[in-house]
Length: 178
Image (cartoon, rainbow, N blue to C red):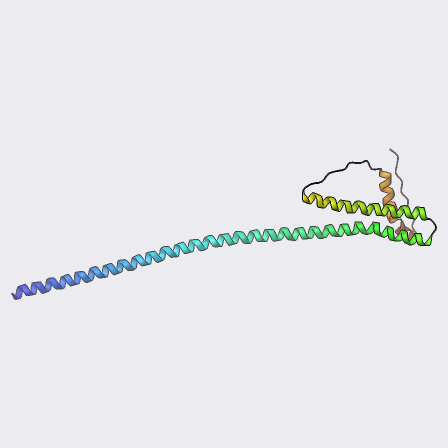
């Protein structure tokens, strides 16, 4: 009976050792599975972060491009306004100088003609600005009409005539027929 008891004790010890081994193996397998799950989650998180990073980089590039375009538009607008200001200032200067001359002289018809030419020039410039706004809005109707080159040259001469006279310069203009 002692031999049976010894064999039974040995069998029970082996069974307990086997159960402990199985339990340790199950625990190790559970730890490995949890580690794999954490690794897979970390990989998904890494991929998501990479996609977000790429998206943010693309957005940053788009924002930089849009900012440059906006800066360019502002520069063009400023250049345009400088040109328009200059072009409107010239006829206005002619009107002011002619009005001063008119106050000092009796040559009313010539002074009135200069004022009318300068006012028409300003009117054309303003109409051009309005045409530009119409173009920006998506439409413009063109009006074709003949222009006499002599009238344009005379207008240019008349617009600077007051300044030339102030500097004691004689200003003439001529156009060849043809």
